[in-house]
Image (cartoon, rainbow, N blue to C red; front, side, top):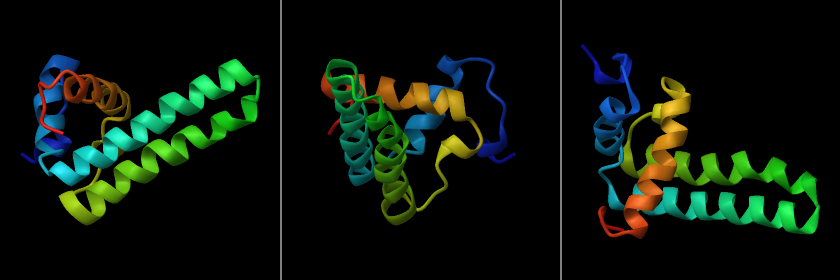
Length: 104
């Protein structure tokens, strides 16, 4: 069975699959840039009161990630099959890169 179509009982079960889908270093770097921009945009909106900036978050986050998948990883983002686990995976991988658990 194709792992992309497998159901996962928990995020802990999903995360190793998520990391397999992000084996390419450039793809991970693009995810990191996109997630950083999402966080900065959210902070900007909160502290400036410019809530309209929030519409940029999906564009920035998904834009960088999807370029990584389509041009470097050569796979379909896990977001299409597992949107909530994928979003969580983005932030866990971001933390793992920041802490050095995963190579940037």
